[in-house]
Image (cartoon, rainbow, N blue to C red):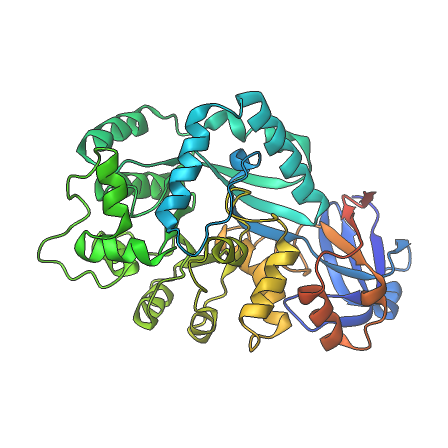
Length: 415
């Protein structure tokens, strides 16, 4: 059995318990043994190797929604006169021109993944349409990542092709659906059953824009026009005789709303739909930076919290966000939801993400038994924090700290 290592810091932020001034984290064999006051843990582990980290120790952050394969894409921010569908048109046009090569795509994705790790991300969920853009990239850092192949098809012809592809996929390839506005009920149902069988999360873009609600409610709006342009409209999104007031209601009618569903965005959902997600134990991931970039609205975070939900946070992609920085996402949440406490926002970026991805056994908090991936944050602002409340305020609204480094993996210091 390896020796115990003891990491000391001016502040330890366990997330699952109150902030500890002059705290410490004891680890052995890559797992946390104990978290508490430095004097107590020094007495408990007198033979431990001691490392004074200064600054703040907190859990690694979790990015629960990112598209690494779009890291080389830069789409102009939509103007007030442009719709969500106009942004999709611009993205598809750029992808279809071939201006960005496969090597460039992979190189940008690898660089972004490394950037995520340097910025304090220990765990992420990557969504992509092409398999080559992800698994190999994940080998370049000590980050823990999962890749889901994203499939879509809006009409009968596409559904037949996609279902055949799904049937040919080996179980080693985890797959999910894109969104209710781009993917038929048949495809989503088959993919959800497959995800349940393989035991991985089923991530789905849900209620990102009001146009999605309009399409599923009455078959109108910009998405219908978008599909008609491409000869892909056959009315499959309409459900005669079914009441579809919202996107979550539509998914519930298909039997997809349960604890294995991760709903990403959730901007245009009603209070009743929030209650339904909570009652079914669904998971939620908010992407405030992307929502602000696209001008689609603000997710009802307060309603979610009131129902006992702790949403995760994601950055989405460079095609729909100015910066894939989870520290910035926390700051945007603070701006959009001033009544939500800094402690709750930080919990979303750590514990909420770990829970959403089914990895809370290992990540999300500094507590006994968790993986010893400790994030050490330092900055003049953090150093000047007078109490725990001020510290949490700085962590969630001050942007990325000036100095970040990883501590504690197997008792070793990693830069």
